[in-house]
Amino acid sequence: MKFAFILGNFALILFVLTVGTGIVWCLDKFVFSRQRRAAADKALAEFDARVAKLTADGVKMEQGKRAELEANLLRQPTWIEYSGSFFPVIAMVFFLRSFLFEPFKIPSGSMMPTLLIGDLILVNKFTYGIRLPVINKKVIDLNQPQRGDVMVFKYPLDPTVDYIKRVVGIPGDKVEYKNKRLSINGKPLQYEQLPDFLDQISYSKQLNENLTGVSHRILNDETRPAFVSDPMNFPYRQNCSYDSEGFTCVVPEGHYFMMGDNRDNSADGRIWGFVPDENIVGKAFFVWMNFGDVKRIGSFH
Image (cartoon, rainbow, N blue to C red; front, side, top):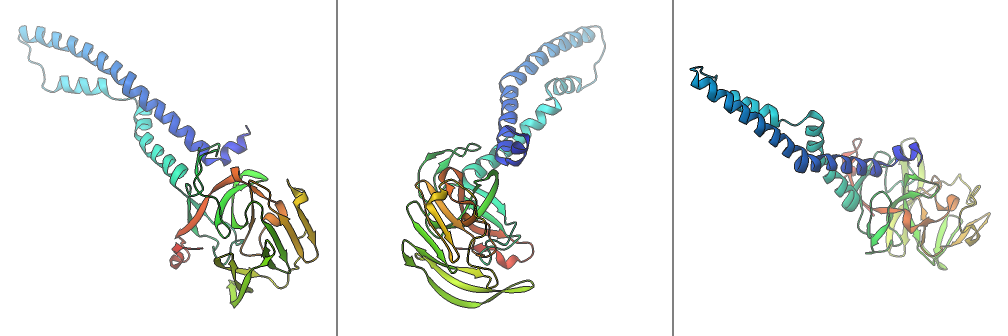
């Protein structure tokens, strides 16, 4: 396992920390604490015997010495104290992040106008089934990704990198993108022209796209061509055909076709292919903060 992969896999780091601190906590609770207690009882018995002898000789002992000695003997070593303190916190974070919700930060503009750079989002980890952390193996099947879902997944070319795109095609779908308009299984999607979208310094053509019942906004750059430039030689590449107007792909079983809402500024399935089910992380559903614009807080679709 490459060191870079370990550093890039926060779930693995969290798992190792949880296991490590958990082992220390268990050893201290069931082994080390008992050893300290036994050693303390022995030392206190010797202390009591000395005190009794000195008292018999008429020597008066200072009050509180016994309690101080006992506290010192039972005190945890610093490394055990810190491990035991961190264990429940790390374990709780690991559980929440692995099975319930995981936070992500949007790093690029590929999902504009739905998601903006700097959006801090929450991803539902159990919508598509319960998966074992680190290895991401599904053990309980619940729901399947649907067209229109905004989904986080492991980038097929580098599983240490998380990507976020919209599900456009599910297994068995025929996805066509011709002259910047989508068709699913031979049925063209419905589009509605919206006011142009201002992205800081430039305007983009904005449309409302109805993706088989899920309405959402997309952006088109009229200065960019419709064809796909330099698609990779990805798995199931034979399921796709490309021409000057765009592409056509048939989604293989166990895979999904993803596209960004910022259609002309998104490196997505058009270039690197399909996302296998085992790469799924979860469904994005809520912006919980954007420090540049708190009005961004809320759900999206």
